[in-house]
Length: 281
Image 1 (cartoon, rainbow, N blue to C red):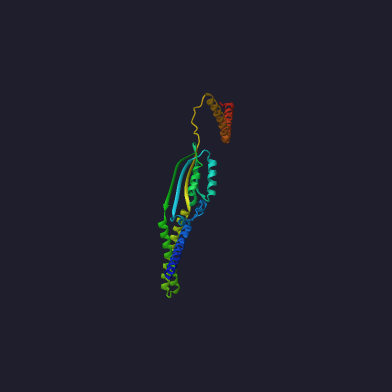
Image 2: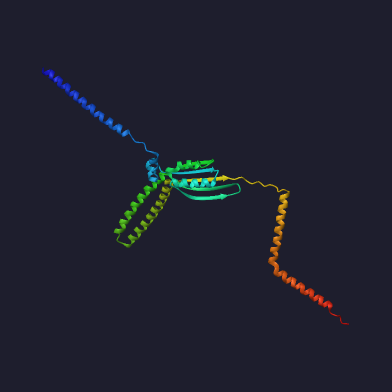
């Protein structure tokens, strides 16, 4: 009887241990399933990131993106207005514009800056304005190494500047002060130079550049040889223009004509009087 009771007790303990193990194994499985359920981000949520740091957080890299597109349009003025509205909607601006007009086309070269998250969409919508796309180029330049190197060097230089400033506060002699101030000046110049380069990279990363060439071709008017009646009409017009030119010329030289005419009149009158005088024998 005692052996039977011990057997039942041992069996009960084994069942309890097994239940505890099975319960503890179920907990990590549930946690793992919860951790793998990552919600998908909407495109608008992804496009909300635009600065260089945010792009690096999203992609792990610092990328400068540039594009070039050459297109032909049916209505230049309408397409130009649509392009300006598109750039404004994308949060960009027109950096440069050069418009040309000739006898056979109207063209415009524009440089557009748009947020890097709007680059692909802007390129596609610009192409949608064209009746024909002649050329489309896209480039992406990874400047992560340079960007991180500048950031690291800036931190080092700023830390050195702070140390020199603390030494300057403790300097006792004029020579020490002069040497420390010179060192601080050189470090400050390096910091400002690297900060300028870093700001340029940040601008190029956060705002992509798109070069757009847009043109509308016009019909070239070929030369036609004038006919008989066209020549008659042209002759009449030229003759009338000649008469007007003579009148205008006389209006400019009338004082000279008046002087010459008066002189000739006086000379002729003098000659006539001389002939009428009796000759003396």
